Image (tube, rainbow, N blue to C red; front, top):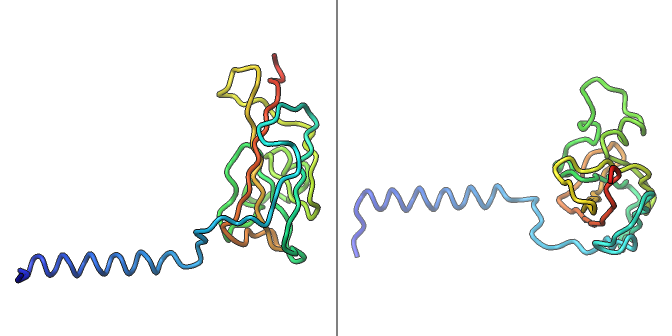
Length: 157
């Protein structure tokens, strides 16, 4: 089979795009990270406030802290947790809590206030918390993320 100039050029461009695309994926993890396991609450459990999220970590995390994001996507790899706050704001626990973001070195966290979900009018609302690893400066270190969902009664019902 003889390739025409157009087909040869197309095949070359496609090959180059695949090589560039695959090389651009370096650093991404395509396997499930099972180092963290939630111990409470039970998955999809109906619970009430305060909710204690607890987990165990199979690998030592000495140089890391945990970032916990409630009802939202976590920050991207390399971003600093301070980026969830308004620019120029001095980070405090209260400001992070108001943004439903928590930073801890412990393997548990008690959530005392979780706002109702605006787009969910049902009496039983599904919430979720996502845990990611942060370095000591507050930067997310890798793609690993662990999520636990749990249900709460709507506060205003």
